[in-house]
Amino acid sequence: MVTTKSLFATDGLDERSLEFLANAVEKNNLPGFDYFEFKRAVVSLIQMKLDEGTAHKSAFTTAATVGVTKEKLVETAAYYKNVVEKEKVQFDQALENQNTTKITARQEEIKRLRDQIERHKAEIVRLQDEMAGYLNQIDQAENALKLEGEKLEKTKSAFEKTHQSVVLQIDKDIENIHKYL
Image (cartoon, rainbow, N blue to C red; front, side):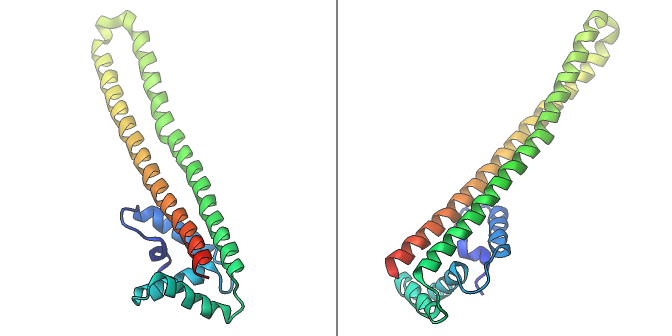
């Protein structure tokens, strides 16, 4: 069985990001036979060892019997590309919210602790033990900040690579539709 995820899967993609984008395409599947069903048919035929050109032509021949045109395939491919683009916008907003929640809050905590240290410098003798504790908290917060930043950057990079691959595949499919049909 050809899953939606397998329609766009290539080596090296982030599984979670691919699953997310595939679910978005599936959720927004237009009724009737369009690019989505055409792509599924082409992939199925290629899995049956048909060459790419023959797979496209065979799938289109079948689709044409229910009134599908080359123009409809290109138009609906653009629709699904737009769905994927909208998901990227939402992802970018969610990533920014995570940045605000996780990184900015930690930065504010670091600033608060540094301010507290400055206020205590006048009483350094009495407060030396307390200051060591705050410095330790700062180190932990900076380490956590670094880890969160790396984690978010890795997530962003994985999503963008997956997004770019899906968009390139859709563009290639559009090119193949024009080339073979």
